[in-house]
Length: 181
Image (cartoon, rainbow, N blue to C red; front, side, top):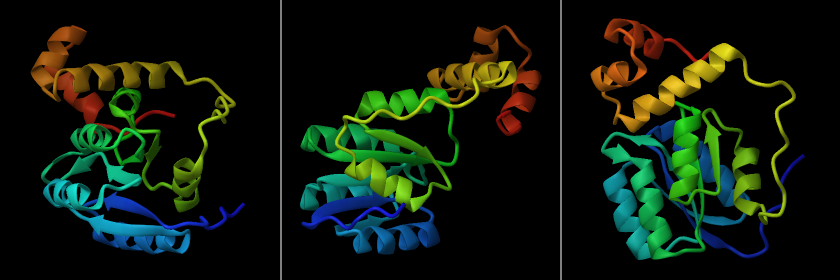
């Protein structure tokens, strides 16, 4: 199901340090009717946001020069109505909650389908996402909890291990693995 192009152009700030992905997404979003300004760093994003005052934004969570969550908060302070979609290659429940609390309207794991991004930017807010067909496994719930505590400890392995009452090396092995299904 293709999303129809928007009838009026709206400024959109695209922030991602993955240049090929940023370029592809920029072209697609422009085809969907957005006036896209794309940048690859947090510092560039701050300058462009002040100049552009975007109505929409697509922001990567981890950028080479900082955290996209900081930009979400700043964009929301500039314009309370800005519609922000957060993207990340490191998806977990803790960062999703943090992104929504900061003001993002949606949180998508990379590689995100561009149509899903456009749908999230265009949603009117009255529709709710469907519940997943199967609940998370116990391993996945445990992994999500560990990730949440890890983020709360500012990604400090030693402090996270203390709070979780586990050996630091055990925690490092868990963090090095991909999330369970």
